[in-house]
Length: 355
Image (cartoon, one colour):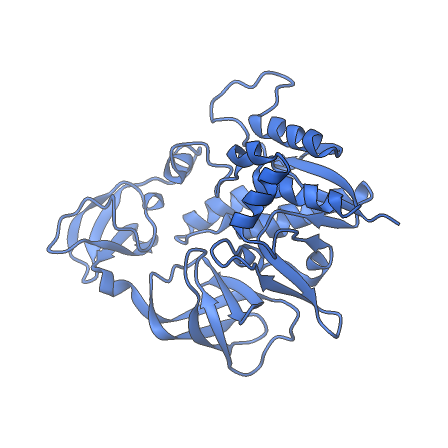
Protein backbone atom coordinates (compact mmCIF):
# COMPACT_ATOMS: atom_id res chain seq x y z
CA UNK A 1 0.00 0.00 0.00
CA UNK A 2 1.37 3.39 -0.99
CA UNK A 3 2.22 5.87 1.77
CA UNK A 4 0.66 9.32 1.37
CA UNK A 5 3.21 12.05 2.08
CA UNK A 6 2.56 15.78 2.05
CA UNK A 7 5.52 18.00 1.19
CA UNK A 8 5.75 21.62 2.34
CA UNK A 9 6.48 22.93 -1.15
CA UNK A 10 7.90 26.45 -1.21
CA UNK A 11 8.94 26.39 -4.86
CA UNK A 12 12.62 26.44 -3.88
CA UNK A 13 15.17 23.83 -4.91
CA UNK A 14 15.32 21.89 -1.64
CA UNK A 15 11.59 21.29 -1.16
CA UNK A 16 11.16 20.57 -4.88
CA UNK A 17 13.86 17.89 -4.88
CA UNK A 18 12.49 16.43 -1.63
CA UNK A 19 9.11 15.98 -3.32
CA UNK A 20 10.71 14.48 -6.43
CA UNK A 21 12.69 11.93 -4.39
CA UNK A 22 9.60 10.87 -2.44
CA UNK A 23 7.63 10.35 -5.64
CA UNK A 24 10.45 8.24 -7.09
CA UNK A 25 10.15 6.02 -4.00
CA UNK A 26 6.58 5.23 -5.12
CA UNK A 27 4.87 7.30 -2.44
CA UNK A 28 1.65 9.19 -3.11
CA UNK A 29 2.91 12.77 -2.82
CA UNK A 30 0.85 15.92 -2.30
CA UNK A 31 2.40 19.37 -2.39
CA UNK A 32 1.23 21.85 0.24
CA UNK A 33 2.12 25.52 -0.15
CA UNK A 34 1.15 27.74 2.76
CA UNK A 35 0.47 31.46 2.63
CA UNK A 36 1.65 33.64 5.51
CA UNK A 37 -0.09 36.85 4.47
CA UNK A 38 3.29 38.46 3.76
CA UNK A 39 3.77 37.33 0.16
CA UNK A 40 3.59 40.86 -1.28
CA UNK A 41 5.70 43.96 -0.50
CA UNK A 42 4.28 46.29 2.17
CA UNK A 43 1.84 48.85 0.85
CA UNK A 44 1.42 47.10 -2.49
CA UNK A 45 -2.10 46.93 -3.83
CA UNK A 46 -2.98 43.26 -4.29
CA UNK A 47 -5.50 42.58 -7.05
CA UNK A 48 -8.29 40.17 -6.17
CA UNK A 49 -7.32 36.61 -7.09
CA UNK A 50 -3.67 37.48 -7.75
CA UNK A 51 -0.93 35.00 -6.91
CA UNK A 52 2.51 35.70 -5.48
CA UNK A 53 5.62 34.58 -7.34
CA UNK A 54 6.19 31.97 -4.60
CA UNK A 55 2.81 30.36 -5.27
CA UNK A 56 3.54 30.36 -9.00
CA UNK A 57 6.93 28.69 -8.41
CA UNK A 58 5.38 26.09 -6.12
CA UNK A 59 2.69 25.28 -8.70
CA UNK A 60 5.34 25.04 -11.43
CA UNK A 61 7.38 22.70 -9.22
CA UNK A 62 4.36 20.46 -8.60
CA UNK A 63 3.59 20.37 -12.31
CA UNK A 64 7.20 19.54 -13.17
CA UNK A 65 7.25 16.65 -10.69
CA UNK A 66 3.74 15.54 -11.56
CA UNK A 67 2.02 15.85 -8.18
CA UNK A 68 -1.11 17.69 -7.02
CA UNK A 69 -0.70 20.80 -4.90
CA UNK A 70 -2.88 22.58 -2.38
CA UNK A 71 -2.42 26.22 -1.38
CA UNK A 72 -3.56 26.86 2.19
CA UNK A 73 -4.03 30.09 4.10
CA UNK A 74 -1.93 30.17 7.28
CA UNK A 75 -2.06 33.95 7.65
CA UNK A 76 -4.01 34.03 10.94
CA UNK A 77 -1.97 31.43 12.88
CA UNK A 78 1.24 32.81 11.34
CA UNK A 79 0.41 36.32 12.53
CA UNK A 80 -0.52 35.07 15.98
CA UNK A 81 2.27 32.56 16.59
CA UNK A 82 5.23 33.96 14.65
CA UNK A 83 4.82 37.67 13.95
CA UNK A 84 3.37 38.56 17.38
CA UNK A 85 6.15 36.51 19.00
CA UNK A 86 8.76 38.35 16.90
CA UNK A 87 7.39 41.78 17.82
CA UNK A 88 6.84 40.94 21.49
CA UNK A 89 10.35 39.56 21.90
CA UNK A 90 11.90 42.76 20.58
CA UNK A 91 9.60 44.81 22.80
CA UNK A 92 10.92 42.91 25.82
CA UNK A 93 14.55 43.66 24.93
CA UNK A 94 15.45 40.23 23.59
CA UNK A 95 16.36 38.93 20.12
CA UNK A 96 13.79 36.52 18.63
CA UNK A 97 14.30 33.37 16.58
CA UNK A 98 11.13 33.19 14.45
CA UNK A 99 12.25 30.22 12.34
CA UNK A 100 12.29 27.93 15.38
CA UNK A 101 8.77 29.07 16.30
CA UNK A 102 7.51 28.70 12.74
CA UNK A 103 8.73 25.12 12.46
CA UNK A 104 7.08 24.19 15.76
CA UNK A 105 3.78 26.05 15.43
CA UNK A 106 3.18 26.49 11.69
CA UNK A 107 4.95 23.86 9.56
CA UNK A 108 4.64 21.00 12.04
CA UNK A 109 1.53 22.48 13.64
CA UNK A 110 -1.04 24.06 11.34
CA UNK A 111 0.35 22.64 8.06
CA UNK A 112 0.83 19.15 9.51
CA UNK A 113 -2.77 19.17 10.76
CA UNK A 114 -3.96 20.12 7.28
CA UNK A 115 -1.81 17.42 5.72
CA UNK A 116 -3.42 14.80 7.96
CA UNK A 117 -6.87 16.14 7.12
CA UNK A 118 -6.27 15.49 3.41
CA UNK A 119 -5.08 11.93 4.04
CA UNK A 120 -1.31 12.25 4.51
CA UNK A 121 0.40 10.42 7.35
CA UNK A 122 3.69 12.32 7.03
CA UNK A 123 4.79 15.91 6.38
CA UNK A 124 8.13 16.21 4.60
CA UNK A 125 10.24 19.35 4.25
CA UNK A 126 13.53 20.26 2.60
CA UNK A 127 15.40 20.66 5.89
CA UNK A 128 18.93 19.29 6.16
CA UNK A 129 18.38 17.14 9.25
CA UNK A 130 17.67 13.49 10.08
CA UNK A 131 15.32 11.49 12.28
CA UNK A 132 15.95 8.08 13.81
CA UNK A 133 13.94 5.90 16.15
CA UNK A 134 15.49 4.47 19.29
CA UNK A 135 15.12 0.96 20.67
CA UNK A 136 12.38 2.11 23.05
CA UNK A 137 10.41 3.75 20.25
CA UNK A 138 11.49 7.31 20.97
CA UNK A 139 12.19 9.59 18.00
CA UNK A 140 15.59 11.24 17.85
CA UNK A 141 16.60 14.36 15.92
CA UNK A 142 20.05 14.17 14.29
CA UNK A 143 22.28 16.64 12.51
CA UNK A 144 22.15 16.75 8.73
CA UNK A 145 25.03 14.99 7.01
CA UNK A 146 26.17 18.28 5.47
CA UNK A 147 27.56 20.15 8.47
CA UNK A 148 27.65 23.43 6.51
CA UNK A 149 23.89 23.19 5.81
CA UNK A 150 22.73 21.33 8.94
CA UNK A 151 19.38 22.80 10.05
CA UNK A 152 18.69 20.63 13.09
CA UNK A 153 19.12 23.78 15.20
CA UNK A 154 15.85 25.19 13.81
CA UNK A 155 13.96 21.97 14.57
CA UNK A 156 14.92 21.59 18.23
CA UNK A 157 11.47 22.66 19.47
CA UNK A 158 9.64 19.76 17.80
CA UNK A 159 7.83 17.29 20.04
CA UNK A 160 7.85 13.51 19.85
CA UNK A 161 4.45 13.59 18.18
CA UNK A 162 5.69 16.04 15.55
CA UNK A 163 8.91 14.11 14.86
CA UNK A 164 6.93 10.89 14.49
CA UNK A 165 5.07 12.48 11.56
CA UNK A 166 8.02 14.34 10.01
CA UNK A 167 10.37 13.39 7.19
CA UNK A 168 13.52 15.10 5.91
CA UNK A 169 14.48 13.45 2.59
CA UNK A 170 17.60 15.62 2.11
CA UNK A 171 19.12 14.96 5.53
CA UNK A 172 21.64 12.38 4.29
CA UNK A 173 22.86 14.49 1.35
CA UNK A 174 25.20 17.44 0.97
CA UNK A 175 24.06 20.63 -0.72
CA UNK A 176 26.41 19.83 -3.61
CA UNK A 177 24.77 16.43 -4.05
CA UNK A 178 21.31 18.01 -3.89
CA UNK A 179 22.26 20.50 -6.61
CA UNK A 180 23.62 17.70 -8.80
CA UNK A 181 20.53 15.54 -8.30
CA UNK A 182 18.25 18.48 -9.07
CA UNK A 183 20.19 19.24 -12.23
CA UNK A 184 19.93 15.61 -13.37
CA UNK A 185 16.14 15.84 -12.95
CA UNK A 186 15.82 19.16 -14.75
CA UNK A 187 15.01 21.08 -11.56
CA UNK A 188 17.82 23.65 -11.54
CA UNK A 189 15.38 26.40 -12.55
CA UNK A 190 13.98 26.29 -9.01
CA UNK A 191 17.25 27.56 -7.54
CA UNK A 192 15.86 31.12 -7.68
CA UNK A 193 13.13 30.09 -5.28
CA UNK A 194 15.50 29.57 -2.34
CA UNK A 195 13.77 30.69 0.86
CA UNK A 196 14.91 33.65 2.93
CA UNK A 197 15.34 33.67 6.68
CA UNK A 198 12.70 36.26 7.65
CA UNK A 199 10.00 35.54 5.10
CA UNK A 200 7.58 38.10 6.58
CA UNK A 201 9.99 41.07 6.45
CA UNK A 202 9.46 42.74 3.08
CA UNK A 203 11.00 46.06 4.15
CA UNK A 204 14.69 46.84 3.69
CA UNK A 205 15.34 45.41 7.15
CA UNK A 206 13.54 44.09 10.22
CA UNK A 207 14.19 47.52 11.82
CA UNK A 208 12.06 49.19 9.14
CA UNK A 209 9.44 46.48 9.59
CA UNK A 210 9.19 47.21 13.30
CA UNK A 211 9.33 50.99 12.85
CA UNK A 212 6.32 50.88 10.52
CA UNK A 213 4.14 48.96 12.99
CA UNK A 214 1.36 51.08 14.49
CA UNK A 215 2.10 51.74 18.14
CA UNK A 216 5.52 50.08 18.18
CA UNK A 217 7.74 52.03 20.60
CA UNK A 218 10.61 53.67 18.71
CA UNK A 219 11.60 56.14 21.39
CA UNK A 220 15.10 57.69 21.16
CA UNK A 221 17.21 57.48 24.29
CA UNK A 222 20.73 57.64 25.71
CA UNK A 223 23.73 55.58 24.62
CA UNK A 224 25.98 54.82 27.59
CA UNK A 225 29.13 52.84 28.21
CA UNK A 226 29.36 50.02 30.75
CA UNK A 227 30.13 52.61 33.47
CA UNK A 228 26.95 54.53 32.67
CA UNK A 229 28.66 57.54 31.04
CA UNK A 230 26.56 59.28 28.38
CA UNK A 231 28.12 58.92 24.92
CA UNK A 232 25.27 59.84 22.59
CA UNK A 233 21.68 59.02 21.70
CA UNK A 234 20.05 56.05 19.93
CA UNK A 235 17.08 56.12 17.56
CA UNK A 236 15.10 53.35 19.28
CA UNK A 237 16.32 50.13 20.91
CA UNK A 238 14.53 47.99 18.29
CA UNK A 239 17.26 49.05 15.83
CA UNK A 240 20.03 47.25 17.74
CA UNK A 241 20.94 43.76 18.80
CA UNK A 242 23.51 42.35 21.22
CA UNK A 243 26.93 42.05 19.56
CA UNK A 244 26.17 44.59 16.83
CA UNK A 245 29.17 46.72 15.81
CA UNK A 246 28.10 48.65 12.72
CA UNK A 247 25.57 51.46 12.80
CA UNK A 248 26.15 52.61 16.40
CA UNK A 249 27.71 55.90 15.26
CA UNK A 250 29.87 56.55 18.34
CA UNK A 251 33.63 57.00 17.74
CA UNK A 252 36.07 55.52 20.23
CA UNK A 253 39.66 54.32 20.68
CA UNK A 254 38.46 50.95 19.35
CA UNK A 255 35.14 49.89 17.79
CA UNK A 256 32.14 49.74 20.08
CA UNK A 257 29.71 46.83 20.23
CA UNK A 258 26.22 46.64 21.65
CA UNK A 259 26.52 45.02 25.09
CA UNK A 260 22.96 45.25 26.39
CA UNK A 261 19.54 46.68 25.61
CA UNK A 262 18.25 48.30 28.80
CA UNK A 263 14.52 48.60 28.10
CA UNK A 264 13.67 49.69 31.65
CA UNK A 265 15.65 52.91 31.25
CA UNK A 266 15.56 52.95 27.41
CA UNK A 267 19.37 52.90 27.33
CA UNK A 268 21.69 51.36 24.78
CA UNK A 269 24.76 50.01 26.58
CA UNK A 270 27.89 49.76 24.43
CA UNK A 271 31.48 48.72 25.07
CA UNK A 272 34.51 47.03 23.58
CA UNK A 273 34.23 43.50 22.23
CA UNK A 274 35.80 41.88 25.28
CA UNK A 275 32.79 42.99 27.34
CA UNK A 276 30.64 40.58 25.29
CA UNK A 277 32.62 37.52 26.31
CA UNK A 278 30.97 35.16 28.78
CA UNK A 279 31.34 31.59 29.97
CA UNK A 280 27.80 31.05 31.28
CA UNK A 281 24.14 31.43 30.44
CA UNK A 282 20.77 30.21 31.61
CA UNK A 283 18.41 28.43 29.22
CA UNK A 284 14.68 28.15 29.90
CA UNK A 285 11.64 26.36 28.41
CA UNK A 286 13.81 23.49 27.18
CA UNK A 287 12.21 20.94 24.87
CA UNK A 288 13.96 17.61 25.51
CA UNK A 289 13.97 15.30 22.50
CA UNK A 290 13.60 11.59 23.13
CA UNK A 291 15.22 11.65 26.56
CA UNK A 292 14.01 11.92 30.13
CA UNK A 293 14.79 15.42 31.43
CA UNK A 294 18.20 15.07 33.09
CA UNK A 295 18.66 15.52 36.82
CA UNK A 296 22.47 15.50 36.85
CA UNK A 297 25.02 17.63 34.97
CA UNK A 298 25.65 16.59 31.35
CA UNK A 299 28.59 17.16 29.05
CA UNK A 300 27.14 18.61 25.83
CA UNK A 301 27.98 20.80 22.88
CA UNK A 302 25.84 23.94 22.89
CA UNK A 303 24.96 26.05 19.86
CA UNK A 304 23.80 29.56 20.84
CA UNK A 305 22.73 30.73 17.35
CA UNK A 306 22.45 29.16 13.92
CA UNK A 307 25.80 30.41 12.57
CA UNK A 308 27.60 29.48 15.79
CA UNK A 309 29.90 26.48 16.01
CA UNK A 310 28.60 24.51 18.97
CA UNK A 311 30.90 24.72 21.99
CA UNK A 312 31.88 22.23 24.68
CA UNK A 313 29.91 22.89 27.83
CA UNK A 314 28.43 21.46 31.02
CA UNK A 315 24.64 21.56 31.30
CA UNK A 316 23.37 21.64 34.88
CA UNK A 317 19.59 21.07 35.13
CA UNK A 318 17.48 23.53 37.10
CA UNK A 319 14.12 21.87 37.45
CA UNK A 320 12.30 20.14 34.59
CA UNK A 321 12.86 22.54 31.69
CA UNK A 322 15.69 24.93 32.56
CA UNK A 323 19.45 24.64 32.89
CA UNK A 324 22.62 26.55 33.58
CA UNK A 325 25.22 26.16 30.84
CA UNK A 326 28.92 26.60 31.59
CA UNK A 327 31.23 26.75 28.57
CA UNK A 328 34.75 25.33 28.57
CA UNK A 329 35.87 28.37 26.56
CA UNK A 330 34.34 31.84 26.72
CA UNK A 331 31.72 32.57 24.06
CA UNK A 332 30.99 35.81 22.22
CA UNK A 333 27.63 37.63 22.31
CA UNK A 334 25.39 35.18 24.15
CA UNK A 335 22.09 36.83 23.26
CA UNK A 336 18.91 36.70 25.38
CA UNK A 337 15.97 35.42 23.36
CA UNK A 338 18.01 33.32 20.96
CA UNK A 339 17.73 29.54 20.86
CA UNK A 340 20.31 27.38 22.63
CA UNK A 341 20.45 23.84 21.27
CA UNK A 342 22.26 20.95 22.95
CA UNK A 343 24.08 18.18 21.08
CA UNK A 344 25.88 14.97 21.96
CA UNK A 345 27.68 13.86 18.83
CA UNK A 346 25.14 13.65 16.01
CA UNK A 347 22.12 13.77 18.29
CA UNK A 348 20.09 16.80 19.35
CA UNK A 349 19.19 16.45 23.03
CA UNK A 350 16.92 19.46 23.09
CA UNK A 351 16.69 23.21 22.84
CA UNK A 352 15.38 26.21 24.77
CA UNK A 353 15.62 30.00 25.01
CA UNK A 354 18.56 31.95 26.37
CA UNK A 355 17.30 33.94 29.38
